[in-house]
Image (cartoon, rainbow, N blue to C red; front, side, top):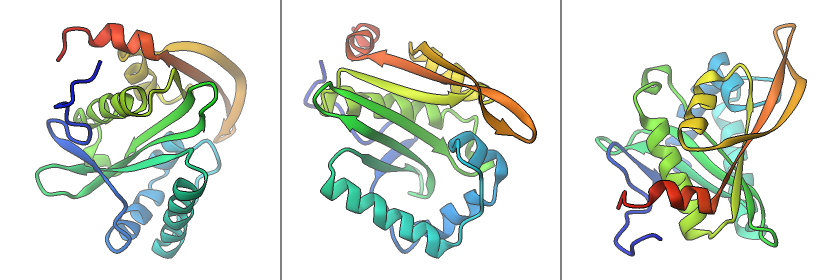
Length: 194
């Protein structure tokens, strides 16, 4: 159970925030030119996007947040200087059954492998289970994304579905793995953590 004092949108080194339509399109556009980031974050073919195209995507996301109410999109920012370092999303929410999908990514190479992903996932789960009261969440990961697989397993996610050879990267076929975590499992892990 979350305490009312629990900080929803901040952790040790990062905070969640809204989209900044002036500053963020330029930054995220640079991420889309990084094939490694795009292949870790997206299952569809990677392609570089201009700042204008990124801004258009932001507008579509905000429209869906307002109208459909089945997606919650957060920017991940460094607490020290508020710079954009990634994104975290709860999406495809099925309110009837309490199910949602989660995605997160740290954009620039120099910000990866610093613990920001763990902090972001912890906050995203706290939001999905504590604030949205979801029953379960799913994360879909290509088998080549070993870092994400380790991260989800560290948080108690269980492999539920493996679609064999379902994504093609550079002429090689890879499995896509769906990991699931139940609210009750998350609660059990967080007993006594404060």
